[in-house]
Length: 92
Image (cartoon, rainbow, N blue to C red; front, side):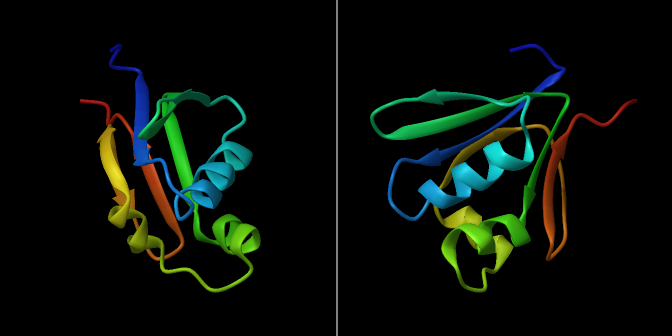
């Protein structure tokens, strides 16, 4: 995988479906690789997961750190707080 691409992969289930939808909404340049048990979202350079967008999709409060429950793998440096989870490669 090229170092300029980042990705995040989740188990394919009902809990992760709105998370994936929210990520795709907030990252229009992202692409999806769907497998029977996994969905992988790839983006050039940077990918952001926003708590507010997930909450809009599920209709309730959401603790962003709970994305780790269905997280399989990721590539990129992580920066996170209670509102955003960001993947990007830090420049040396």
